[in-house]
Length: 426
Image (cartoon, rainbow, N blue to C red; front, side, top):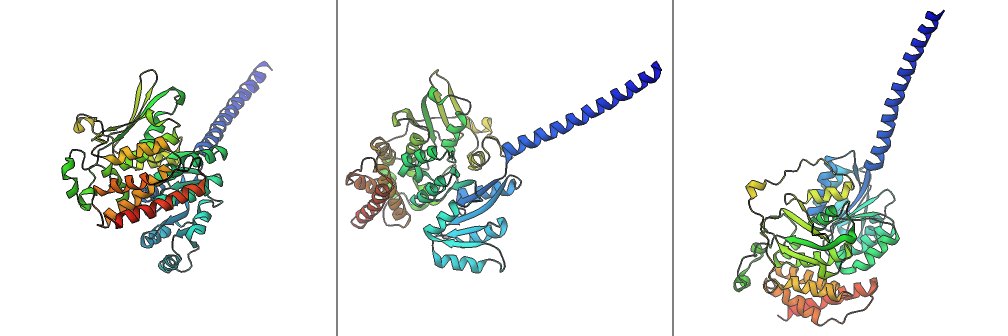
């Protein structure tokens, strides 16, 4: 009898062990499923500016990780040929172009029977930015046009992956206050702000002593100022390190790009301008740094490729296996730093002044810069005329205090008209 009971005990023990083993495996799988869905829940994107440089790189990442991202809406200004190809590949619910005539032409480029809504204008932008099926809006439109749809998206509770500098430059207080009110994340795509954002992970923002934004110095970093009058559009579009759109490439050549980033950083990280430094770093390996109150300085490094910053904003708080090359540090050699020459690059100084004054002056700075850059690209003014137009427009502006959206948009419109008039009288 004892042996029989012992045998039953052994069988029972084996069964218990097997059941325990099965339950353990099931528990691991269930916990993994919960963890995976918590961290890697599929994100449904609206891409504002899908045909531009940032937009195209965003779509490359989506294509690389189809299990993590899907496209619900695409927005473009006028490149309907590229937009049509993107629609065929990613099959969004909706596409928007600025002009209704282009919307009709876009429809003609698409296969018959393709299920998609084609909209246009500001109303179309708002519908796309607030689409119920979207949970992350990529703000990659160039210029002031990107402000309103980003505000609409924030109002609708959508998280924002932000590349459009002008949104924060023009209306940083409005944007950040609304984001806080709606509990919306603003995830920076700009490589410099992404670098700072990454350096701050796990650190107390109250311990920041200063932010250090790096810039390559552009193609004219070591060119004598006396030769600036002979700079051509082709010269200015030849950036030594980065591949970007025309407007931002010219801004990089004048260092206005870095000035706009100072204003952005002021709003994103809630620091006064006198605690935001700019250093020229020609190698473009260190994308920015954070100095802490204990004397430590943290830097984010990588090759000059926007896909890293874009991917981090899309997948935050996780990192994606992008397959990006690492910097060849021995091959790169010394990493050097210089103080930017404000006399040679007055656009940076003008941006710092606008940041210090605040109110509507940053919107005026931005609008007059957009007009001046386009005039340079069109061959109407010289490279050295860009800061002159901006300074003249800023000097003639009467600043609104505590501006709302209407005052900011009025200042933007006024500055465009004033800058255009100044160009016509040159």
